[in-house]
Length: 434
Image (cartoon, rainbow, N blue to C red; front, side, top):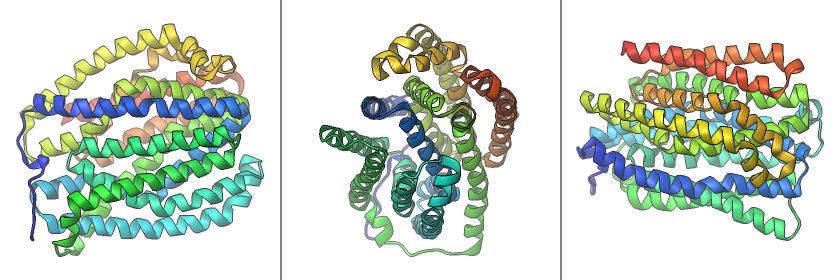
């Protein structure tokens, strides 16, 4: 090879110093990105009906579900194995992993593109009950062909623990959405169709930025190495990816199944209220999400290097972080829910803020469980993680089917919390056993 630069992941940096350094970039970009989702929904709330907002985000839910089939679990498999190869300086295997991931996902993307294009009329008629859904779904078809390249490049940045680049690219993509929407808004062109075009434009900008940085920093990895396509390597990656694939499907269902129950049993208006409530939850999770996203590659590195003392110390830091986060989140959600919802989304969405006040004692359950899931991913407990998530999904679906038709949105919150409690016990058992 002509050039093999020293990566940060090769260095033995004290844990506290590393966390403080990453903390700055994680939260800098998190706070930079945070307003974008609310600006998007604010523009939508001022220009679209509650029913149209509920319909658009229900379509996004479907796209999210289909994306997990497009991914095939290979993105997380890439993020799990790639740091191990980089730490060992085995760049041949690292290159092979990147290329095989791209090729497999491109093939799956083309298959899904074809199925969604020809199945759009049936979905529009029998599920969404709206003819304009056909156009939206067909515009999103292109998403599946190009998103794989973006995800693989992001995975390499995450594997190298380059949080500044990976989060900076996300910021560029999100602010592209905002600026494009503002432009359409000025010309009075905000519709479900234009919202869909904005999503595709943002992804294209993200790919252009990521591609330029990828080639400048990691082009040597592609140019200067041979490939190793031995069968046992392929089986190892696919075996891990299979469990991640099940995990991604269960996770997508768990995160979005409540919106679909609200849409089906209670109608588009209630689905709109629930969508804004989930947005308010996302704002609260800004406290925990940046550190949670970094936990997976960091734990993976510590396990690979056999730094068990640092791993134990990291868990102590995370525990105290969650305790203080729970106190802050509980107080803020309880006292400020309706005010924040009214301020951001106007009086018509005050109901969403009242839901947040009701949910205040339960809000921390979700972030705590996802922190634990990130830890399990870092130590390679993919199979156990799937079993725990499926138990939470089953608990949520059964309870919602029984209670939602007669008891409304507040029961969605109660049983979402119950599903996280079920998963929490499972996670604690696995971590304590380890």
